[in-house]
Image 1 (tube, helix red, strand yellow):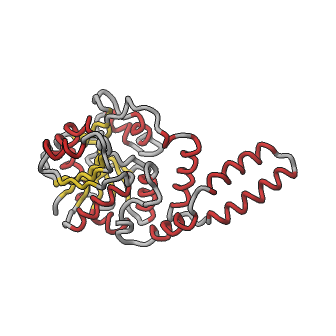
Image 2: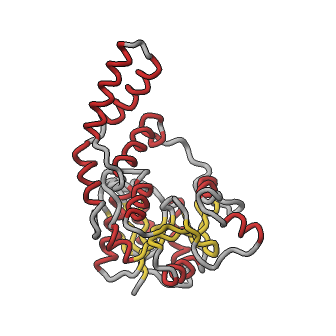
Image 3: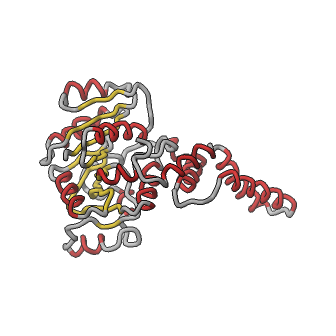
Length: 303
């Protein structure tokens, strides 16, 4: 069965040649689908002229990272893909990367997602965030084996690795599905791996496969403002299929707690409860919990 690479673009012109050029040079041929989220910098036209072999889907608007990837993954499934490879627009692979990931996935079918090692854009160091995902507490054995020069020829189980470069098996897509539409941008990969683990599949990192992720010189993002981050963390918690809490129940508990704190002059506890209360208030409890219930069912959810 064929391998489909899925790239979501949004004003990604600076990386088009590096990203798509690396897929063109892959030793294992892939069929590439680009889902453009309404770029205004000429990205789609650049892709059309420089990479005519790429199938380009123009959404006409920004669907968000997860929903746009879902479009590409649904297309790949419908066309019989054995694996899909999600790649960020600002990342690129080394020639053997996808072949190594496919080999690992076939030899170790308990893994639903396998990611390569993530270097920075210049290739001079590990990507900073990625390095935190593979510390011994989160990815036992990998650091030691790399330092000693004898890494396993198999994926190392990892709690989390971001979706800048994921090989996803067809079995995983048919069991777990696509990204939860409750997440517009960021947090969708946390949720996906939680759902995957819920269904008994593993995530892994393959030490013999590598990508470059060019994100060092990036300005601050509104997606990481304090309140937005708190909301995203709460959304991750309440979207986890293993979570049994109900948002409205928790809101009522927090309301009672705030009243009790006011009556007993517990100012610090009041501020903490109020902060959590405001976070939960902006969430659509019905939608979040419905999507959580869907996530508990096996099948190509959200695709």
